[in-house]
Image 1 (tube, rainbow, N blue to C red):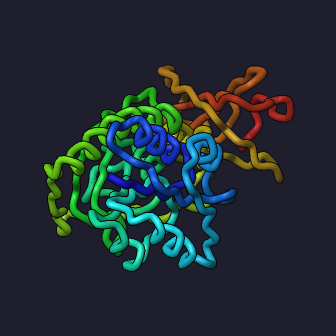
Image 2: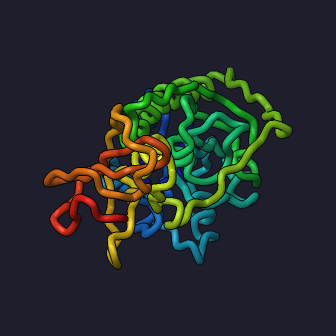
Image 3: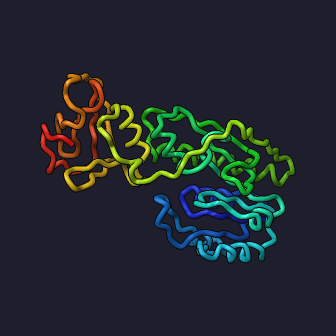
Length: 295
């Protein structure tokens, strides 16, 4: 079975390596990006392609038709699209015989759309999923081929949840590919009446507001932990990036205003939040911050 891959991030790399490990598959072509300013987990797939002598094409977003022309040369049975920032058009979707298999780390039909790992953590969800589906011209709306639920632990951050999802997705790709080769793959239509959509996040979604609960701030920090750009707060005229936080069990007087610095260490500050709670924000230089200061 001749397979193509479209992608340019860490999950794309996992998918490419997995496909290369499957007997009977011929990874015949890869469409990727030479660089990306929008993908925090960008990965250069050309190195793997060169080692394995796989033809590849760097897509220019302004000339997407060239990607279709490139893939047309290889008479593909199926294409995997894993880690791509925009929808594919009908010309590309209809190119491989079995269609294009997409990947979305959420429990479809819920939570279609953008930034599923970030939103799942920021909203405090306790479960997500790794979902593969046959792509159509909609956003994550095609029939599902494989879906595995994944528990989100309170200790998870973006990096650890991403790793969990990739471990599950690797197993799914192997099974999906074998099912496709055997002709035993089953596609299940989504219940579109149950569909929900997550919007594209902006920088302001990462701003820490100390009127939030400590738990809400902690969820935001772990959602935007590396490889993502980190939650942040404003210190006078400088944004401070916060890669880590720790919840505390101690209760503090309710009449202390949110945003007051209660304690500090070399790499963190304890800040009063909503009601009687406070939170340690960690992983940055605290030299310019004083106990008693308001943020």
